[in-house]
Length: 246
Image (spheres, rainbow, N blue to C red):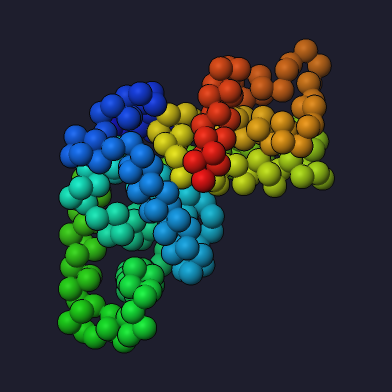
């Protein structure tokens, strides 16, 4: 599981859904999708509070998706796993945060209904207990992810295409990037390579804006991405599904 391009992590949607360890433990697809959104929302908030870049947040989300591809939600609390994934992603993306800071912020978020959470986690005994929990979970996450910690994202192919298409001045780049970010809440990153997701996001954004995408001479726009029309359609349909569920 050490392919540089992360190819060991790509599966068809039916493989992901039918072989889900959570499904085997009685957690149905609807519930698993809800849990997926839950840890992604949590990581977005945690990352913003820790002031890490969006790429770091996206890496943490992908670590989580990969973990639950192999492990069940039934006996691996997503709050603990997400906290570990943020700590690891911050290191991998060279935006490191102190373990203590990650634990403190995460604990306060998890216990946000308790006004005394800040004081509780600062008690030495409680903090040490939490720290041991996170370090133990980190061993498990690293064992599941293996040495495959380099993650590529759709942001780079998206930005490159937008430069080529010369549409940087309109709403398309912002909307396409939003679709990429929202798509992180789904299993798209386990099905499609980053440039496929970028193509789907651009296609969806152009549809929303009723924009004609430019063709470069003999090349149709999607050929810039080394992607098939079927892949573009599948990515954009799954992105749309997310909004329909909401």
